[in-house]
Image 1 (tube, rainbow, N blue to C red):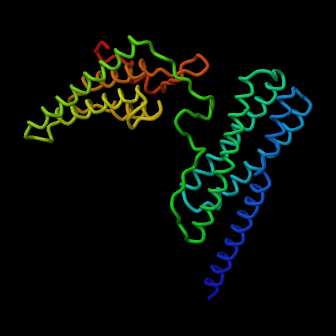
Image 2: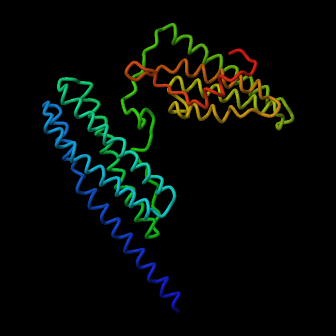
Image 3: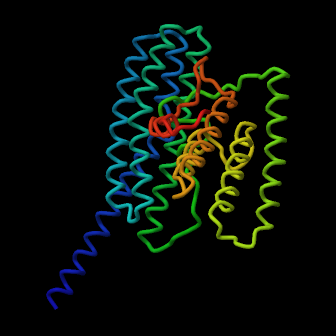
Length: 304
């Protein structure tokens, strides 16, 4: 009887703690929902008012600390691993975006006529507002899980998505290719599509579908065409991160086809990187993971 009573008290205490945490988070999100500090920073920056920018920067810093602590609090009452991960992501976003907004506002105040400085501040503020909106959704889901109501899975708009990264939120600017380069890419794509069809047709003639050469020939052919579609902005691969993840998976060689397989994957990755015409502020937006560079560039005895 004593054990049952203790368990009941623990359950009630857990409910009270959950209620206190979610109420505090809800009140804080409502208080910051109007984005007064962000609006004031934009105005002060556009006017070149450094004193006002410094004042509102301090307020934004306080707001950031409050939101970070709230994310940590919600993490402890999240209830499920996916929601806990979402809380960690929200905390990281506020930690990164806050200083970026402050720096962008100061830059705009120093150069109030700069269009680029204004765009930078707008982009960072948009990321902050989006994360605040997602926090409201996250809070509702945490309450749903605690109450046993698991509604439809909602999308978190501020989670990493094509073209936006925590390190650089500038919009990607595609570089226009001349007619000769476009024709070359189109020709390569057509040839690749024909070769893919030939490989599939040839593979269908084989009786042994478990044949290692056939299976990996089909896999490599499909992978190459998928990477070609990526260079055109089509297909299932949406970001460079998707591209390199696909390549990393493909770099694991079959036992008896290691050299041929890695050479083929390396060629596909380098060609996709070569024909991905995206830049940010004049610098290449294609950041190849170091582990991929090591695997692709290590000597295998093949010439790419």
